Image (cartoon, rainbow, N blue to C red; front, side):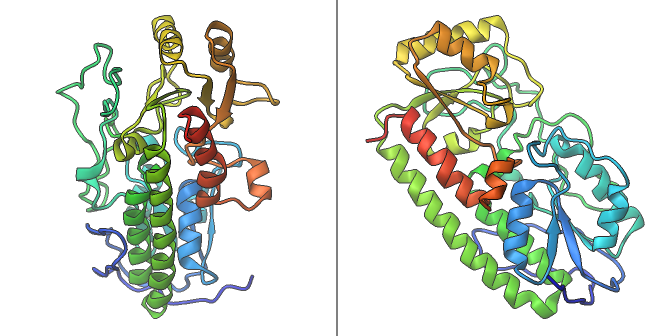
Length: 352
């Protein structure tokens, strides 16, 4: 595809009516000579950015197929490559610390690059990383089952120069899994692209509005799914990625693993999960396909199938990455939600 070259102007305060868009985008200084393409920090942001941009901008996802976006580290001179492209879409949260570092460098040294924080304006809607959702009687907080009163949201919306916080964060970053909040992020991306490329602002707004309608339809699909469920609790043998879905739709997805992809369950956590599976009569264990190796279930899934009355397992995806088999089918965010997550939740929660 041959991409058009456009002038990049200073950032303004444009906004579009997609979701409940609020907040500011980061300031960029002098105009860029070209606007050939862009980078997005992980799979879902890449998919959304490309759909909003349409044929006008070619976005790239630096995270390799089969790898999740957070906990990932880039190799080579990725900062220089992004600076050459003209636009960077990311999440300003320490779970994507590599992207924070690049954004900080771009803002300080490459003022012609448009830097768009998809979380801008969402601070009061972000869940704590030790969040305990409503809808079930099982603890999801700290080790004693309560939320740590000393935890603070370290997402810093002050984008003046090198002011990013890179320390520990209590924020759960998986906000993109909520189809309602996803509409806000899509709006933020669209607004950022429109500010950077006002000649094509109408295209970005139109594409974002159309995509927001599909996200709204996905929200309705989930509403109907969880309303029809005979069971309100399922078990996920993977890191705690789905709190936003639980908060939105009022079900419980119990996991013995924490929010961090590097977290490991204790033997006590596993024993509690085994008891829960049998107490609730759960037949299907959910797991992350990113932990599936050579067609084999992850070890925790095998342990639960061995030590409980559960008889089956199905994957659900957290959508921070994609797999080669889904890529070959050209599945984006919506397709993976509908083809992977909807059937798995329906099975695990006995949807009639």
